[in-house]
Amino acid sequence: MVLEASPPSCDANRSRDVGGIVLGIESTAHTFSIGWVDGLGVPGKSISAFVRPVKGGIHPREAADHHAERAGGILAQLLDEEVDINQVKAIAFSQGPGLGPCLRIGASVARSLATKLDVPLVGVNHCVAHIEVGRERCGCDDPVLLYASGGNTQVIARLDGRYRVLGETLDIGIGNMLDKFAREQGIPFPGGPKIEQLANQWLEDNPEASLEGLELPYAVQGMDLAFSGILNAALNLVEKGKPLEAVCWSLQEHAFAACVEVAERAMAHAGKSELLLGGGVACNERLRGMCDTMSKDRYSTSHVPIKPLCVDNGSMIATLGRLQLLWGEPTQLNDSGVRQDLRTDETPILWN
Ligand code: ATP
Ligand code: FE2
Image (cartoon, rainbow, N blue to C red; front, side):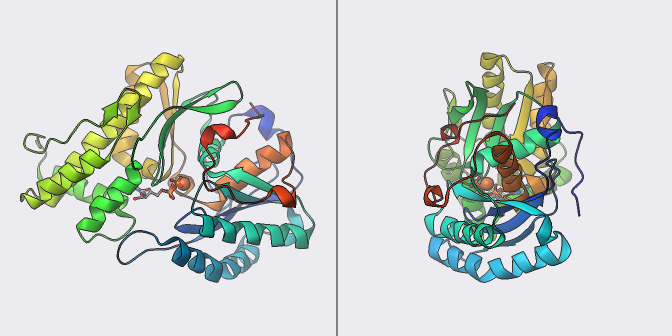
């Protein structure tokens, strides 16, 4: 099943066929996923399994055990329902950043598959994959990127062959902040979607809702962001008896406004007229709406891929793997070790 998407951009990349399917294996944290793209980069469906801790955050070793248990079944299902194994031309995998034990499961599966099928192995940067799948699918060429996920919150622009981080969170990722707030309210991981639902409920019940009495700290520090203060203040509001729905709404308004403010400043400084959203938090309709409004005010455009391509998924890894294969070199086995602390700007971007 090939995923629907808006018209593609990046014509130079699209007119080049790698001559078969690229599989992509994602295993940086809570998700184990295998997806694919065809030779021209059109993504197929990813098959995924998620760790959902009942209590507390993700335990790296337990998540790795989960991934190891599910990997065989997911691969079998993908080959059964989606992909002809004889058409596979390369295996891409998330090389970093992420949790070491989780990354190592994906890397081992990728190495074994590439060796068995005798096809190239391509290690990719997970953060850059979130960017490239959006750029490939949304029809934008040189955007400022707002990458908002669980572990990362970065505002990025391309300069001199790298994605440069112009601003980022100084403490926790915005998605982690939402998940932590949710967990304290007994809402299981991932908390973001439930917070969105509760915030919508508040607005539906209170169409004239005001932020008075629901104020939270300012999260912008120059071009950077910080979410711990907002998290603690939101938890205090609930403790003081403010309705949970109201606090969820306020939390979204404050945290998203901060991200959009930094993104707008980046667009102004870098002279760019496209904004691209990526990462799991980019599934949020309110964040999408704020980005649209800000971009329209600047006579610019805002873009976001379909939701299955915003959250962690194997197809985005395959998307970047295909580009690296077209424009760079495959990864040799002795260079295929995982890199837990890989940064967005460490990966050379060789394509347009
Ligand atoms: P990364 O390694 O890139 O930081 P990640 O491991 O956090 O990625 P993603 O799938 O990119 O994984 O993002 C998951 C995050 O997205 C979770 O924090 C989740 O709460 C958040 N999220 C998902 N849907 C929504 C939504 N509708 N509104 C807000 N947040 C959301
Ligand atoms: Fe991610």
